[in-house]
Amino acid sequence: MADVHQLLRSLMEEIGSQKEQDVPSISKLLRKWIRESKRFRSMKTIGSYEVTATYIRSSKPKSQHLKRCNSENLKQLSFNFKDFLDTRKLSPSSKNSYLINLQTFYNWLKTEGYIPDRIKVPKIKVSEKSIKAYTGKQMDDIKRQIKWRMENATGTQRGRKKFYQHHLRAYYMARYSGLRCGEILNLKLSDIILEKREIWVRDSEDLIVKGAKEESVPMSDKLFHFLKYDLKRSTLEIWYLDTGFGNKAYAKSLNLTNAMKTHLRALGISGVKPMHGFRAAFCRNLGLSGAPLPILKDLMRHRNLETTLRYMDIHGEDQKLKAINQLV
Image: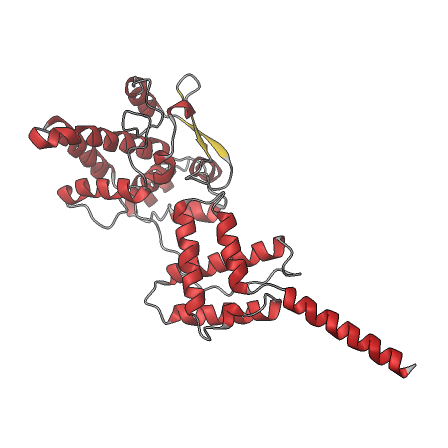
């Protein structure tokens, strides 16, 4: 009888050992996660995931990512990864972005059934900074600068007139709708509905809309009057920023951002993100005009009100006086 028990015990240990061998390594699952993410994530996000994977493989001990995927090894990896990031010359927000990527990987492991419970990755506490916006004068100066370059493009610069036109289109859309740079880049002409005064922001191959697969943005009077004439385009054009032959004028947000920088340098404007400064001004000016915070949150398409409040760092004496004078 004892021999039977011993035999059963040996069989159970052998089965357990076989199951352990069947568990894939963290590194193998990391590659699979990135490969599957390419189906629905933007190229920018995938690039960030790949950098995260490189940093994970560089973490000490370097064999950590080769271990079997289980909760204990994953927890140890997250601490080692955080320690590795501390050795890099990265800002706290950059470190957190890589830690968030690792958390996304762990969440995927839980969803796919590779681990039984969700594992929380430790984060770095970052003090939230207010987001800098353009002043009204700066935005007016930028528009004048773009128009001046359009009107004075001669000789070899004449070929750039089309690009300056794109800059003006991006200016109007960003200033008067609050759309993000990537959303403007991926905006189709068919999603601009003049009759209903709506702009639809939708998921595409290169863009995942934050918060929802598609969202409607109302069209202000100034934007409506600009688009009314601007949308008289060639039938070949598909995109809001189009080459004229159905192709995007800019492949990446960085390209448009750098293009807008040329106007900022000419005007001596610094300290404001070239494209995001318009979105920040859109939110700030609406807040100063008395728009309720819930409406502001919806117009900015933020998930949390706390994010909207970061755009509303307004403490000037004139704003305080204006607020107190609202009392009846």
